Image 1: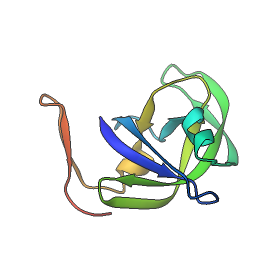
Image 2: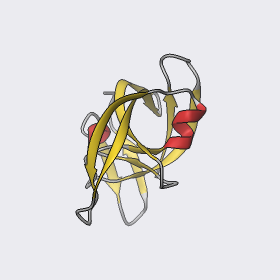
Image 3: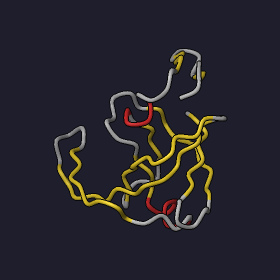
Image 4: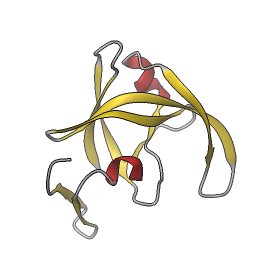
Length: 113
């Protein structure tokens, strides 16, 4: 788990939430209610395939994402209209150097992006 903050560029509003770190997920997924709360706008319509092979249409939202002291500007996140869990996927994780300790259930950022 990881604490993150999302900021919508058009409004400057921010929301803080806890996300699951998922190294198997290609994309970062955020419940749409958080994106609506900060006034983030739909940017792109896309297709998403779940781990079970199911495909559905989703919308990507452009936000700035902050983890600890590191801000990643201009990150596309999937707006999840069905789920309640935020997921940090590889589109974010691949920009960071992270130490994951699964048995201890903690993570550490090793450097800035």
